[in-house]
Image (tube, rainbow, N blue to C red; front, top):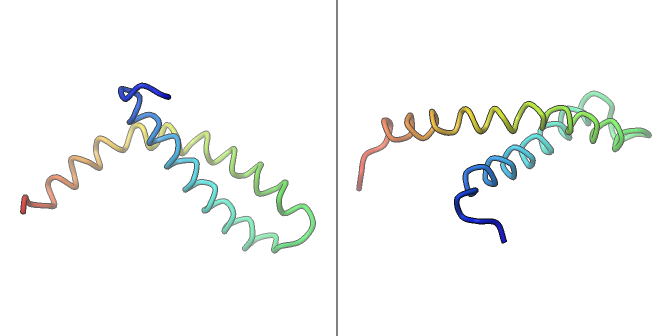
Length: 75
């Protein structure tokens, strides 16, 4: 198991991986259609997108938490 202190990094890794996987699939499908070479092109696009998505989530998450804190009130 992974130590709990790595929770934010693991969260960012999983979230950025899944989101970039889905967005790259939709984008690739819209451009190429579901024809030959789709899977290879999609996975290539996904890996490139994930390289940007992961550090972006790490940098933006604290700002997003602060913004959500400003926009919500305790119940």
